[in-house]
Length: 308
Image 1 (cartoon, rainbow, N blue to C red):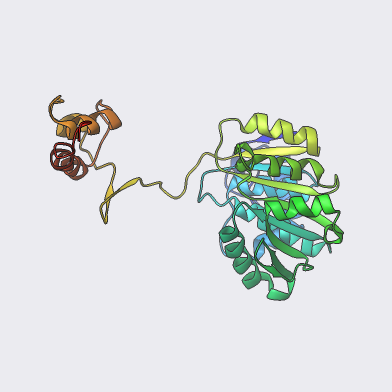
Image 2 (image 1 turned 180 degrees about the horizontal axis):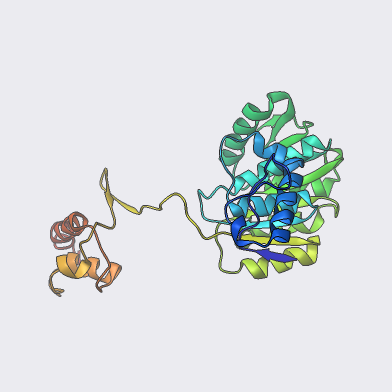
């Protein structure tokens, strides 16, 4: 097992060994030659061919995970929502099709399965992609099948012939393994999949990625842990007030500057104060605070007491 968080050498180049890439000037001649040779080898590999099908550059963590897959290892990719970790799952599908194997893409809910089926069918063709959920069965013998995790678990227990020639399993939202009600399904799938199947585990950022990866390494064999904490898509937090969506935080206005001292007789103000806390730099939207105070004055004071 290995953990990768740093950058690899720059991406593939079609030039000869003497070609350079950003950062090569800081390397020795031998290191530059080796980096150039690695880029040439990658350009001629399955990963290089996959990259040429894309209209965007892969990030470092995506390349690291794809290299691990190409080299025959399983991967755990933990990255924020919107970081692009699903591209690693798509590379597993690409490898399966190139090598005449099957790939299963599992999701925790039917809606995600339907969405992924539509995406993959549009990319690879409806004849190569199937969908299996509790309600739907479409082209289940296709080389690429999207399904809920429970469907795959049932296949394993039934020793289904659909598992023949299975090479890759992508487990999207694998952090569901920690779910107290459904987590056992993910655990059973990971443990009972044939040993020759490479598992691609895609997870939101979790605090115990190292521990989780070590467990995967124990039960599945050589597994690399790829962690990215960079969030390319900003996470904006909002509050639903009636039918209006309001920003939770605001520009340069700090909570202390817009909130008067807590008035014990003003339940609305006390509610805002207790839920958001205090301290400089905690910029709460002043419009939201005004609404909260107004609602507190109108709602809390008119609410009947315990006696009716």
